Length: 333
Image (cartoon, rainbow, N blue to C red; front, top):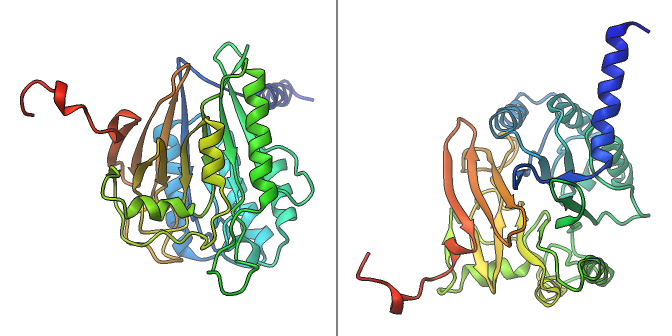
């Protein structure tokens, strides 16, 4: 083995060893880039817009973690398109995780095969699959690695409803709500009974997104150009989040013409920005959502980064979404 080859192997071992130790804060912050709805089609020139978006924003933002929230592949065979997408993230050399959307199962490759491809890919931080379950949690450690500071949940929203006459999309299964409750309780117990701050990612929105959209008292930031396409039935995942007391925010995709964020009962319900090319409908320039978590704090900053460099809708949770106390305000603004 040449000296150069040995050094490359040593570096690779160090990189993967670092990932095995878990995700960590750096200088008090942990930055996430959320890409969503790539709708990547193998050999379609329109998908170059998606790959250029990914490379440009990763280069600019230099995230600690990349999260892709579904509808990743949009051509058959799905494993071929998926491998092309995974090769892009391999080149970027950044930790990443992925979730499925409603279109990923339609591309001729079983989801367990696609999950295993994603989980085994270089720089993936996804845990090994537990049977047919695709939900997982990722602890984010303190900078010194001595304790868990926050938790990131990846939740599988499935595809189409198995119950006739109750809408298009499948609600969460009861066992998923139970899994979240139990997982959250486990983190709380290890944290001396205090819930750890958490955020979650999923493909299509919770029904509460539409409740928030129609509530005139809800503070909203960003663009809403279509109704939220959620499941018609409500499985109680949002209720579980409130009762567990850990969830700061939910981030989804699916609705290509929405990138808004809304505070609903103390939980930020937020869309990513469509990241794909012209292989599916879109009326917002493609880009990504950025989330910057704060170590030791129950807060984060977030904004939209458009391809081309424009930064939009920069807000902070919770202060940007809470009405001030007008009684103590000094004068008018």
